[in-house]
Image (cartoon, rainbow, N blue to C red; front, side):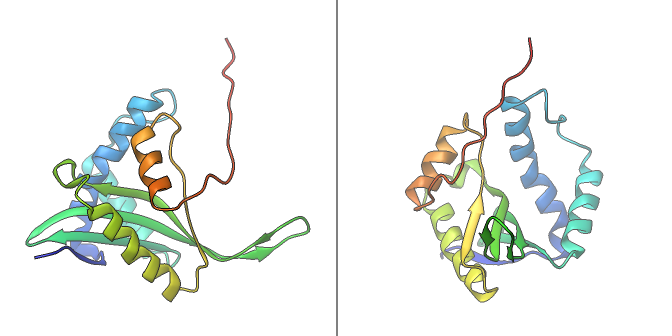
Amino acid sequence: MGPVFRKATDKDLSHLAVLNRSVQQLHVDIEPGIFHAVPNFEHVKTFFANEMSENKNRFYIAELGDDIVGMVWAEILEGRDGLFMVRPKSFYVHHIVITPEHQRTGLGRKFFKYLRGQADALGCKNIGLDTWAKNTSALDFFVSLGFDPERVILKKTST
């Protein structure tokens, strides 16, 4: 049986919080001066519940049989024309998580195909996301899906 992708509900908050731990820990490992250690489980559930209640946010679950093996947190960014640029309505992926045992199995690729359909249904021309430069496996994965680097953000820390 193949994966099933669906919108998350309030009943999925515990699963979202558990899956988020790996993303948060990766962020802490890459940039410990910026990210907090993995927050309290109940606080993460409350945070996601609040985010889920906002119409602009979308949470999705990947299931294999009875197991939840992935999640996406995305936001609909409303397009706007400004003086200097045109910004179309877009679907911005904040987090994608696939459990380690299901990575490199094609599940993430299938999840993005599902997300493309969701974005299209919402009238979003673009799917955007970002990743840390040090997260080369994620960067390679996103490029393999056809994502193109759009801009580069640099920083210099004072000594």
